[in-house]
Image (cartoon, rainbow, N blue to C red; front, top):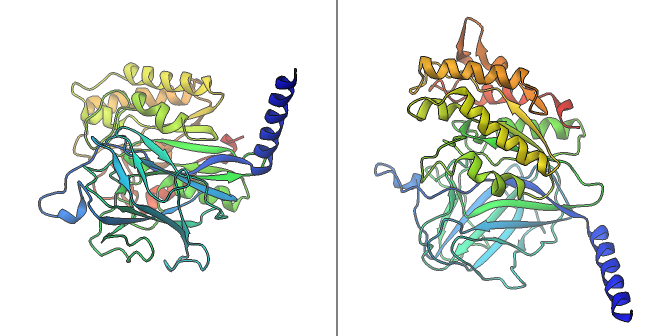
Length: 399
């Protein structure tokens, strides 16, 4: 009885501490994929390995909190990854560190850590209060050969790479700096009850923001986060999209595992997720030969729906954008796209619909985007197009 009483007292104390300290939610994310070697004509655009170097990356948080923690990944590394030091700081719009915001990051109380091959690593909590849409700089020192990079290849934010341990004063990014995410896959914040809802925007390059302006935060999920913040809606928005990703098949190493394979890790494992948006399938129609039937992609969506509902979350389907004029456009793919979009709109299996197709298509040529909204390849929007997408989201979907 005495043991039982002690256990009950411990459980009560633990729950009280949890209530006092709040809960963790995802505030920013970039899904890891396999590394890509540097193009021969521009080595700065991709770095396959690091050795005695500091990588500095800036991310924009969607939600603030009383403390934060970061998640690093060696999930595609063939060997253990040594972490020499990590430092975070808030930066203003001018890129200058906010006074008093620089903090060392620890792992089990230590400044250095080793991440086993195939594993992620969560940091200890950092006592750094943050606000929604704050910019966080993360400087990561790797003292030894990283044996490749668990990278997210479409970061759309320039990073800096400096020799040695430059975590105390990392340099500004060079003009030709790479724009991937290296080893950094998530930033969580601690919030007090009631918990903030979290939206995970799951998809491919069109959600990843490919061909938007570097350092601009012009992806459509960025605009969604801005609208929610401006409307005093207490939502976080994380972006687990991977450029080139497909629902059913995959083309490693740079486009990540297919959506069905990565969904549990990249969405369901993010703390606090309450809503998921899905915009994916155009790469299946364009890259996969023979062109998959609409029924095959819809079956994939149904898997995502079932797995989301198992966790008590809502899932919202986005119609596939027009891609006429893109290098992989085909009449067969267009026919299947129309069937898929009709099912998304009328099937009532998703918990809601975002009609991106209707917002972006050219009324005179509905198989194409409006010319002023596409980036030049007729597949990806430009900054204006991504803004239109972000404005097309009905905020009442997130209840």
